[in-house]
Length: 421
Image (cartoon, rainbow, N blue to C red; front, side, top):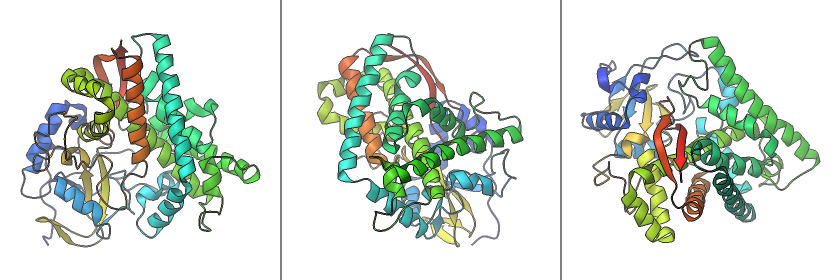
């Protein structure tokens, strides 16, 4: 192994700069292609952050093969030091944001086992029926409101929040609070949601958001101990899943993971879907000709093309060579899903949006291995049902004007998008 890190990449390929992520999507993917052409994984300085001192830097895995292999090899590529932040998180952040996504086995396996077994066939069927009902109400409300509204607020953000809150047994009166706090937690560097200029204010906002979500579910769990309900909180706090249950802290962290990941990723996939079908009328026509036959591959292509979660981080547990790239124990690497999903060695004409693409081995829900997205089935269901409702009841709906993108290197989000019909 080499004794020192390579020279960091700078200039227009520098992934550590927020300006890179605030630029055009076309230039971003051109940069990814140039990075994939390098002989080994590129190395970068760490981005500046208000909540941690600058670290030693990070590597980016931009090739599909590298992301897939690192995802499977969890003994070497560890999540325990943090998966959602390039800088190491302070201890108080981990109190709220330290769910299974930031764990290795056996802790990760235990939590995932408990959560997975709480999703009984009966409960899954109920959730699927809830998605159908909620999507119908949301689209009916959109039609009543008329064209010219914000598609994100009126449609895309409503469905996943409604489903997750119903799933947990949380009442509609908490909807606005949950949405506000998830926006803060995944705000990136976007000044619409968070104060990025004052470190103390930034930290306070993020911790307050996590604290409010945690208190919400902890209070509900205490109620369910006395009065059980037909919801996930009851299941996850009852020692009836092979004698295992989540602790109150584990439940709170899981809820934050569920509501943040389930809301942000699904709502952005739905929003991007409307934009994509507006920009690519040929693909919209293909879907309209055989919706039920093509919606499955279409959802996979939306997730590949958009990559709502841009990356996850891993930390090397020992010196290791991966497809010619050398890493040392303690090195940080990003599994750059957005880059891997445009790898021309895997996807023919990768910059083309093609709802008939097959095969489509994208890593939009994470690579193979134990950390693949637990909510992928629900996300697919929500995207499918919402597009069916929209294109059936509002067949002329389209995006109008330019999307207002979230300024983030982690979430490929759209904050606002006007819709017409």
